[in-house]
Length: 306
Image (cartoon, rainbow, N blue to C red):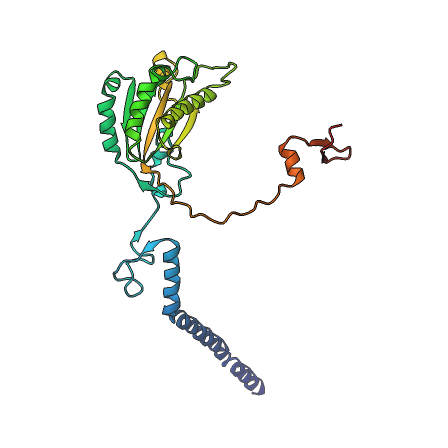
């Protein structure tokens, strides 16, 4: 009898242990709801400040609508996003004939390319019909492809007698406007290596520079101009045939839709006395220094020539 009573007491000792687990469970549930409640308490003023900061950083224009905040758009950053023209260039802008304007601080539309195309068609219609000049227009550029035989002798970058009328015609159309102009030189893959031009790249650069200088001589502002050289590395046709090589030897004058903006007049400032140039720098500029390799490594400079 005593043994059964002892077993009965031992069984009752384990009946209340579920309360410990239940208390732990309720504590965790309470902590969870506290966290959820704290997350739900959003400081609208701070949230609005964060959104405004993001909007200014990404140049976002907020529009009205039913958003997370009153008066905001249908998304966190609104519906309209403004972007610079350079970000909206088409994928084809990486090709040589459609290269974007680089190093230009201000982009402003110039004369319409369609108007310039019409003027060029009227002025160079006979050359276009003969296939010597080709005009191509897209969204960003108007290109005038000039056969190298029209401007230069074979293997030369000196303008021939037919170049002056062509460049003068181009200048008469380009001078009244402010559009940027890029002059691009191309060659075929026939190797050249003489005392003047060590490669087709050098020849294409010299030819593009010659046409650019001709435009400057006719009064085109140099700030609008730049020349590019592609040599044999950007062919228009297959170099496997003479006809293809003929199409690859050319100079392209590319007119951008963007215009050069003349800088504002500089206000005169008081004359600042220039700091004297250090003697060592003067010696470097005059070529009067000598660089000596030290026995233990390193170098030393001296103005002594002995």
